[in-house]
Each structure stands twice: as structure tokens, then as C-alpha cells.
Image 1 (cartoon, helix red, strand yellow):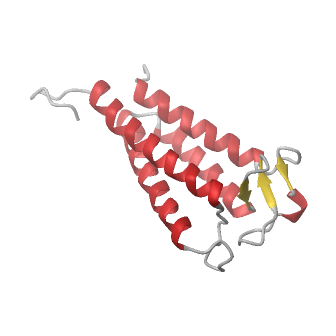
Image 2 (cartoon, helix red, strand yellow):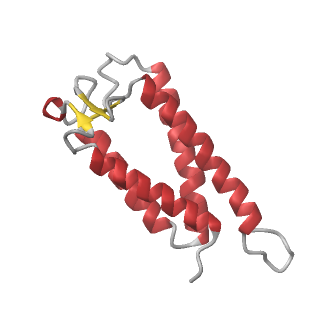
Length: 146
């Protein structure tokens, strides 16, 4: 199988999410690992000293990475991963904006740096999924991209 640019981008996103999930547990890369909680805004761990993480947050990154690598194997899977994943990250961005950082509802946990990163990821993933699907999609008998 020859990977399309869409599949390559989905693979890169998946690999980066997987890497971020692992690095979230690595002392030095993540400060305050000893203060990491399973979930909740009380977690004192900060990936790269910027992004608040918890065990649950890191697990979500790991699962999102595995999903990306698995779905990147097919054109439609890669497109769905990028567009659907971007939509999920947009919802997480909105959630982070409207849920107070000290609220018990902030169970992932999310801080301002996480919120803005989630917005950038949402835009980048959806844009890549839509634009690359149009430019590299397989064409059906009517000549339209599917």
C-alpha cells in the first residue's frame, strides 16, 4: 500500500499523540510527576512545565495516538480520524473555556495552555482532513472525490 499525504499526516498526528502520552509520565519532561493525580484539577504535573496533565489526560493522549496510527492505515480512516478528532478537540476547547479550572468538572484537567493548544489542534486536524481528502482522494466513476 502506498500511503497518501492524508494518511501520512494522520500517522504523524497519531505518533505525536502517542509520544505526548508517554512523555506525560517522564520525570524531567513533566514537572511534578509525584504530584500527578489520576484525574481532576488538583494534579500538579505539568508537561514541559506548561500543560497540566494527569494520568487520565496521558491515557487519553495514548489512546488518541493508537487510534490515529490504526485509522491512518486507510484513506477513509485517516480522513475520519483527522476530521472527527479535530471536532473532538474543538469540543474539548469549548469545554475548557466554559468549565472553571478549579471546578470539579475539570476532571481531565485543562489549563489555559491546554485550551489554546486544543483549538490549534482542532483547526489543524480538520483543515488537514478536509483539504488533503479533496486533493488526494480517490475518485469514483463520476469523477468526484470520495
